[in-house]
Structure formats: C-alpha cells, structure tokens
Length: 445
Image 1 (spheres, rainbow, N blue to C red):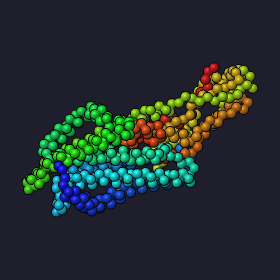
Image 2 (image 1 turned 45 degrees about the vertical axis):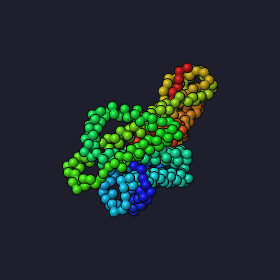
Image 3 (image 1 turned 90 degrees about the vertical axis):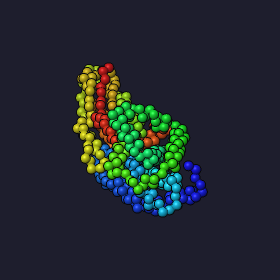
Image 4 (image 1 turned 90 degrees about the horizontal axis):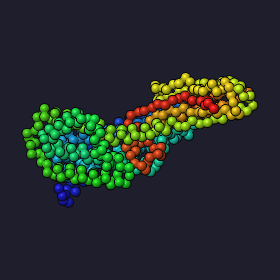
C-alpha cells in the first residue's frame, strides 16, 4: 500500500498522459455546457429587452445541482472504461497504486474544473442581468449576491462532489476485486431498495444526518474531509491487492457483462434518486413551508376621515378594477391571470356609517415562484380617497421583471447562510402559487 519514489514519478507521468488523452473530452464538455448556457441566457436577454406591461419572472436552473448529478452519472460510466483506459497507458511504467491514484487525482481535478465552470457560468449570468438592469429600469434580481457565500458554496460543492466521486471509485474498486460476488450483492441490494424504497428514503437521511444536516460550516468540512480520507484509504487498500490481469485471457461472458452493467447502473440510478432526495428535497421542503407561511401577514390598516358626513349616511364605492397578469420570462407560455385585482368585503358598514373615521383592512396580493415574492418588486399600492360621500378605490403596481438566479443549492443546510435571501424554496423542481387579488375589508365597529 505504501508508495516508493518511483511510484510518485509514475503517478505524475500517468496523470499528465491522462490529460493528453482526455483533452478532446474536455472540449466536448465545454461545447455542451456552452450550448446549455447560451440556450438559457439568450432567450432571457431578448425577453427582458421587450416592452413588458406585466409582472414577469425568469426562473433559472441551478447549474451546480444539474452538473452535480451529471458528474455522478459520468463517473458511473468511468467504472466500466477503467480497464480499457489503463490498457492504453500500459506501455508506460506503472503499478496498481500509481495507476489507480493517477485516475483518482484526474477525477478530482475534473471536479475542480466543473465546479469552476459552474461558478463562471453563474458570474457571467449575474453580470449580464446586472448590466441589463442598468438599461431596463424594471429588472430585479430576486436572490442576493454574497461573495462569502459564493466562495464557501464553491468549496461545499467541491466536498460533496469529491465524496460522490470517491464513493463511486470505491464501488468500482470492489467490482474489479470481487466481480461475480459484487454482482450478486448489488442485485440483492437493488431488490431490497426497490421493495423498501419508502423506508429506505426515510432511513438514509437519518444515517447521513451527521453530514447532510450539519448546520456548522466548519464542522461540516472537518467531518467531510475525514470521511473522504477514510473512503480513499479503503479504496487504495483494496486496489493494491487486486490482480487485474490474472484472468485476462479468459475474459467474461457477454451475458455476464450485460447483467453486470445493467444491475450496477440500476443500483446507481436508485442511489442517485435517494441522494437527490436526501441532499436537496428534504431541506427544500422544510424551507418551502417556512417561506410560504411568511406570505400570510397581518392586514394593514387604512384610515379615512369621514367627520364631515352625518351619522347614518351611506358611502358609495367606485373602484377601478384592472386585470393582473404574471408571465413566465421566456416565451410567456405559462401565464397566471386574474381578471379582478380587488376583492371588497364587509361593505354593509358603508350603508350606515358612524364615527369620524372609516377603517379599512388591506391585505396586499402575494405570488411566489420558488419562494420568491414577485409583488415585492412590483410596489403594489392602494389609492383611496373620499370625495363627498363617494369612496374612490384604485389599485396600482409597477411592471417588474424578476430574475431568479440560484447557485450552490446544496449549501442551504448551514445556519450561516440562512435568512440572507440566497436560496430558492426548492433546490430541485418548481413551485408557484398565491393570490393576485388585493383584499379590502370594512370591519364592523
């Protein structure tokens, strides 16, 4: 297990060769990421520059979450090409240790490159939206920009990604060491998970709570790094005792390979689903409940002087009603529409007035997209005046284009980042709802 000086040199040379042989893959990854990036930002730019007389929102996906899962699936594939990749490098000096460690380091560098790519995409998007807000007055960013969070979130992303890659590498080492036995165990594990998927989803968060529910950022890094070291040490220990070419001439039957691949991929898919629930959806649900409860605020009071009206007289109400529309940012294919902007109740009070002051309770409209309150950016206002015995009521709001640009959704577990306007309600998926009607109530005296 211990390495000598020659092995360090082998690791360095093999790592350099892996970069040379994988350079084309990097190019394709950047091309695909670039297409996804342009496909998301370009329609948004054009939509923002249009003349929009409504409230419009642009809900961007969190690239860190997307690439995190793409990374996991990509490294499942690397398990099956490990031997063929090493065969291409077999003419160079190497040992089991140097071969495996160079592969592990290469994968870790991949994690770093992808993490920095996510950060670059976010910063470019943020800069574009900020620039647009200079020229278009009604453009608003729903989430706050916090440099400390951007940097800390990047390292949280690194840690979670390194753990996932290390676990996948450990699975690969086990498969290469005990191929047939591992197939049987994985088949049993797959059957057990499918049969008990609900219980499995409930148990796993509790098992991993020491890490995924750790509210302290410092303790999280200490625990995660310790766990990472243990996983890597076990992988290296198993790999150093594996003889890869002992049965090279015999090979595996095609049917065995197919079963092996199908079972392994199925297990990894289910584990990824469970992981997505564990890392993202549990915390998202808790945050979503807390955020929605904030919408239901106490009514505001509006006081109108009616001292000039005789007691027992009636007040006539005239109000300007206008439709309220909320649109999605790109294409406007989804629209939330309400024909009535005002709802009046308790108007029987106005038929026989008493006292010198008319009290009106006012609940402003609310509408959220992934926990972001759109009307906060639209400046809704009640315009109420009394002329004689006629109460004129009007409701106004500004046109607003709200950009929801999240990043590092997996860092939402830490107390240090809570209540700073950094996260959407859902790290994955989409939620929207509320009421676009302003409620006015004339309470009984």
